[in-house]
Image 1 (cartoon, helix red, strand yellow):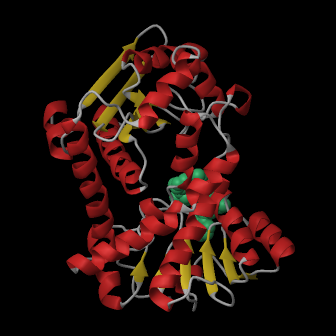
Image 2: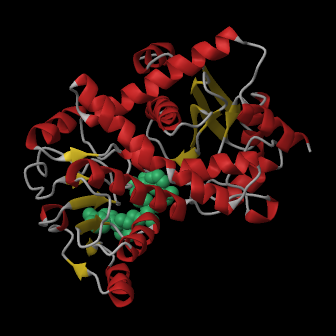
Length: 371
Ligand code: NAD
């Protein structure tokens, strides 16, 4: 399949930029899916893709996902993403990231980049040498640092919203919550859950992480192959994607699934199946938007307090999703997409009516970078 056919297949992307620089070995693609709400923000992934087609598929899919995530989060941001083709362990150089930074700069702020799988704060610093359109830069440059605590706090808000919907109370006191994965997000979430008085059950394939959680919080431990089937009120997946699939779906013994992991449903039909089973699913990209909210605050001029405060919005956003699901008699995963699409339509139309006016965030962004 040729690149244009692939772009058509994946939706109506506004811009797809192929970046090439032989001298530094740069092969990258930047995809801007939609900028109706604001500049397209999304990380740069560096990965040893088997084929260029794989890289294009990934960037088209991920950039579209960012449009939905930003919109459902209520942010004035569009969706974009970039991929650099290469091995992040052996093929990184200052020149590579600076050349990539020049391509980012050529888009004049229509695309803003950040860290992602295979890229680090150091790489962002090199991109920053060539363009102001980058977030996730070191704290010394006014950056926002590690997003995980903010993501985890947003996840807690998502869990509380789902509990309120399912159990009629958002107090987690005494509730059994299972957490799969004790990484950056999971470990912070466990801390919040324990503070809320929840009874937490954890699992990780890394035994040092399990031991640490047990030593600090005295949480219950189960083996990695047991966690999804554990008897509990709420499952909070915080490890890998596609954990709700044909093999696992009948094993869940919970009333709610709400966690930080990306792409939890193997396929959309699994979301419908959860609904039939009476398990309330809080859609992942609405629940885990706290990290994106944190980065957004960086664009306005960073304040940790404001970022933390913003993550509380996840509660309302998840509630809105459940309202749409009830209104339209659909699964919550479909309702999340509808929430995102409705906002793009309403706010996009507003902007067309008053084309001279840019959104506040965009204006502020310019101010920040022109200082
Ligand atoms: P991480 O790599 O720090 O942690 C993942 C943890 O899961 C690790 O401790 C790993 O050992 C564990 N794990 C892997 N397979 C497992 C299994 N089968 N059973 C139990 N544990 C297992 O990653 P993270 O940053 O904490 O992110 C977790 C998830 O949240 C990912 O899906 C990520 O895409 C998503 N997410 C993270 C952020 C963020 O701010 N970090 C934001 C949005 C979404």
